[in-house]
Length: 79
Image 1: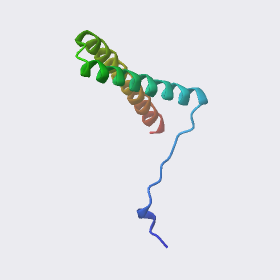
Image 2: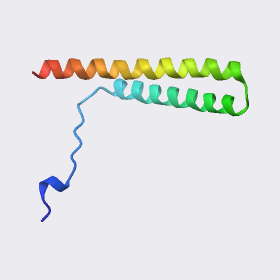
Image 3: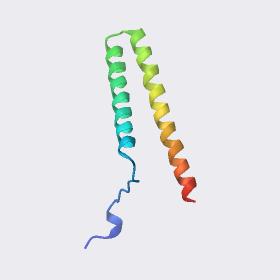
Image 4: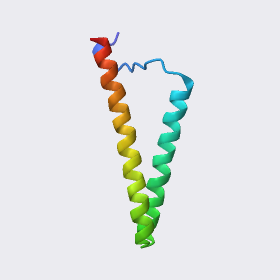
């Protein structure tokens, strides 16, 4: 029989369906702007590249900071 240490266990917190839908929408939003950014960069469209880069970075930072804020709030509530 395998040791317990050889397995990785993922634990998910119970979330409402709309939280998962918002996460999926945010991920698709960031993925879309990353694709637009790369495409504009390859086609040498500097104005479109800068605009898509700003939208991509703002969306990425906002999503990560909201996730971090919720994570820290959850950890604080558990202690």
